[in-house]
Length: 403
Image (cartoon, rainbow, N blue to C red; front, side, top):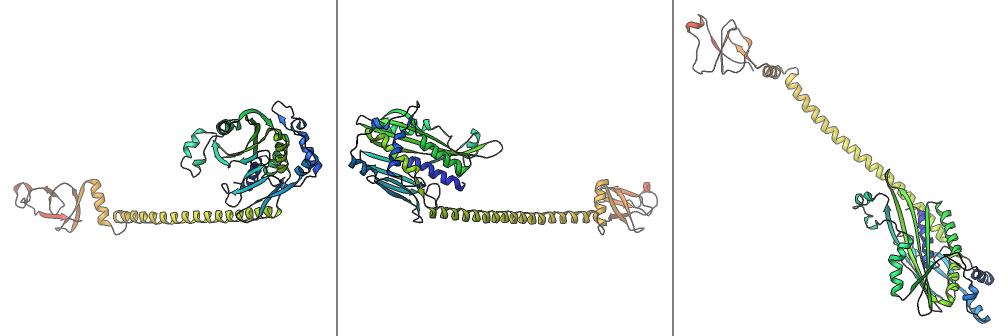
């Protein structure tokens, strides 16, 4: 995975962790409360007026509410602070780094508890890989990432499959979908700047209520990026997490704004940015070195294969040359003549009467020949043509194969 995607994943977790982002700056008191007046947009486009839902606070309560404390999100491997965010001083914020995606770069789980029955937490990041062509799943079933295979689903389906049962078991009923425009715009701008448009963000926020005077905000954030897998398919890497926030209904919109401020005004540690840059540079170097080693190993394997094949080819050539030399080569008259005799169905015999070789038709066990090259074929071992009346007054000698 590319380095920028790691940062984008961290941005996503900020949404689901209610504050685990990478930048912070302390607001002035006036700015802090100006954020409340903007409100949030419902799915119908209407805005909720915070003045109607907020309880009337005395001066001492407002002063107390304005007090903020900084929470640091720290990498457990190096001890370096990754980022910091400001939360109300009476909120208890706990963060835990996880290393599911990268053993060097953490993604944080966060738990928050505070007054007015405030409880907030985020779920671990779930990572999946999907393909456009259904046959690719079958083809890739034995791959190392097969356990991540899952077709990408909409945030609404995630709500129905995971959030709805959980909320109903907790006594909450769905009220409506809302949008958080300020937060969405902030995250979209961050993702666009980091990825150049290659990574997409999808957010959905839902409102819930129980019969005990509490409301809940559940936000599902999903990011995904596509890359070609082959000429016929595309791989989509997609991941999501959900954030749950519960609080007394009278403080619902106020708490949303406080969490938005913690995210948008967070601050990334320059030392951490430098560490990540060095880590990415080192990884790039190692990747280049490993690529070089892989190329050298491939070349060595190819050379060894070629050397082996050259040995096999040389042995085959030697065997063929030996056969050809035995059969047709110089100094191989006997083999050559035997080969020719086999083709012509002949035998070569030696006549001791004149000291010459003669070609006779093959197929007999004995051959008798006179001094003029005439020959008799015979298969009777006791046959002797000498003295025979029919053969004339001539001498016949039993001849042997020359080869």
